[in-house]
Length: 525
Image (cartoon, rainbow, N blue to C red; front, side, top):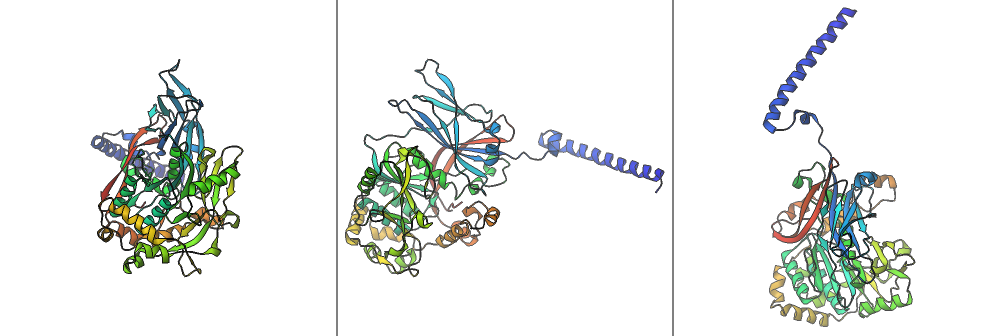
């Protein structure tokens, strides 16, 4: 090919490109007129929105000690933490009684939980304003000041001795396990049980409301109602569809086990000044003393001999509770369930030294942050300590009874059943009629347990890096998903507001309030 042919070919390509650009221009103008957008925006890639989720804010007003502070729970996209100039959170506080009523307070950001495969990191933003204030507002990444809903922990005249923070549940059907736990905690003088709910069977929710009115379970939406059972909506972040953002993922699938760490700290921060001891458990963890002594006295005595202890590592026994299907099919009474089918293996004692995990009871005024099975930050000079199993232990009701030779729990099932039936009658309920409305099988528990086991970290670090964030959302449980769409449930509902910062691509979502609603579909992720 000579130089003239090359020149002609280049000209031809230029003419074709010019025609194509003219076509794009006119086509773009037509689309602009239809959409009202700038023609240049038609050729831009959508901005990847980086999210800050503001979950809950606690205001502590210690007038005597002059050490007031505000703690805010956040889920933050990792890229924002990598570029602190983007994040740059500031607190603005207001006090009508101050000489200068509004002033800025330097904030401190603490990472509470960061899982390598998950896109979101759970953090606490601490504003130590030092004195009581009337209002706190925040500014993120050059945003306008944002006022968050603030919870002021309601301190009782006398501290609660022992409070239990239970792990959140979804599609909860195991009512026989729930009653077992609540009646054993009533027997052992537990003051308050706090339950976090994503979705639950309507009849079990009704049972929870009865315990809340009785004063054993704490039932609440956003703010506390007094009672022994509290039921709180599990934290659920808005999806990208709901807010029109371009995150291209479900944020609830990008925190380990759907915001469970957030729930633990929500419970810790609300009750840290009002409780002497707080235990962090799941519903299949039964905290007991060997002879069912009052648990507050057991922990108080141990703390007196270990003044520098902030956290007790309570060991667990592998244990068994008869499954719901067998319990319903045989039409067993609760007394029979507790005397014959509540079993544990004495040889399976677990503790941290054996590299198998127990659960924790903390002294909250010396504990800054926690994980599922241990404390992650303690006050200076305090330590974590093993708790003697002869004083208290946990029955882990998960394994099949055929794995071990089990021992029966020595319990007065008749007295425990009488206490429960008297409780039901006080609310004009017939246990026989009530039982007909309760679930007869555990339709999803097998899939969910397999999901959990499949997400357990592998010894091979390279394999872990290839895993997705541990979440039910990432598990192949299609059969259960279909069943859940056909089940009536009481589900959590979180109401959010959204703000945009002046930094392009950052969205701030603030949880305003939470409640529950009854629908014909169960949430689980």
